Each structure stands twice: as C-alpha cells, then as structure tokens.
Amino acid sequence: MSATLYNDVTVKQQLIADQAGKCCYCEAYLLHVGYGDVEHYRPKNGFRQAPGAKLEKPGYYWLAYDWTNLLFTCKRCNVGHKRSYFPLANQATGRAHSHHDPLARERPLLLHPVQDDPAGHIWFRRAVAVAVRKSPRGRATIAFCGLNRKKTLEQRRTFLAHMESHDLMAEKNIATMSAIDLVREIAKCGSAQALVRRILQAKAICEQAALDSAEYAGMVRANFPHLSAI
Ligand SMILES: [Zn+2]
Image (cartoon, rainbow, N blue to C red; front, side):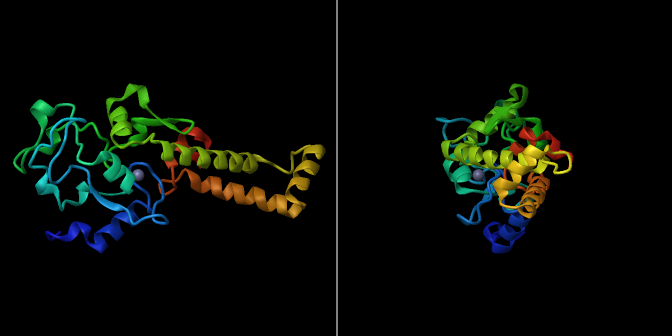
C-alpha cells in the first residue's frame, strides 16, 4: 500500500465492505448518519497506556499502512473514546517500538475486532456490555472504547425491545395456536393474511439478526442464543 493511501476512498470502501458498514467496536451501522473513520488499531503517531498517562512517541509508524492495522469505526468510538490509547498487559517488557520488535510479544488489552474473538471476552446482559469471566481484555475494551456510553446504551435498548417483539412474533405458530389466541392475533393485525405476513416478516428479521453483518449482532447472540444456530 503506498504511503498516502490509508485514507484513500478505495481502502475505506473495502473496510466498509469487509465490516458490512458497521463500526468495528460498537457494532452500530453508521453510514446513514456519518462517513465513519479509518482507525489505526495500533496508533500510528503516539500511544497512551492509560488515562492520564503521557502520550508516548513514536507510535506504530511502521503499521500506518498495514492492512491488518486498519479498521472502520464510528467517530464516537474512535475520536471520543479510543483515541490514542493502546494499553498492554505487559507494557514494561513487551511494547514494540519499531519494526525490529516483534508484535507477537505484545499482550494488547484492547481486542482486535477481526483477529480476536470478541465474544470470548465481551458478552451482553440485556443491552449492557459486560466482560466474560472478568476478562481483562473485555473490561479494557468496554472501558476504552466507551461501549456502554449513554447514547449507545439507549440505542441498544431500543434495538433490543424491537428484537424481542420480532422474536415473539416469529415464534407464533398459527397451526398450534388456540382459537382464542388466533382471533386475538388476527384482530391485532387486521386480517389473517396480515398476521401471516407479520409472522413471516419477523422470521426473516430474526434469521438475519445474528449474522456477522448485522447491527449489534453480539448483543443479539447473547440475548437470543437460539438465533445464533440458524
Ligand atoms: Zn462505534
């Protein structure tokens, strides 16, 4: 990749395609409200180990154009939270300072959304992101990327409420429903055909909701485990 290309439109378009238009950290679809950022997992200009720590330079300048270091994010995750943080569990002994130092020696506290399996470290209690078995990497990623920030929590709560209603509808089976329930459901939808349409629509939504490409798929998988198996 040539030296000015990480912000090149084709690079960004490829990242957007690879990540299905989702922020790699908060899993929100963002293209309808913003352009999104190309973010460096390992910061290129300088890094901080912790809040209040000084910005240490140089950063990971040799990875500025490395494909595996580039991610598509929303501005809130990138500029508002992660910024130049790149904490290591072994900061004193493991930090790479040039291309001569092996990255494999580093033990990053922030999860790499593609190379790591976030579900092994971050789970959801309802809409709230929680660390799996107190995983230090899960905790750090939730904290440094602001995954439980107020607006994101509100968004996930609303999304979850919609998903619960779709899931309830998708579970309905006209063939086994009692006559009283059937009459009530038909009345709610306006007609028997409309009820069938709503059930089919809900099934289709649920089938898509736990796919990697789906918005808030991590939260959906945690709250609707039966959808992960579809
Ligand atoms: Zn985000």
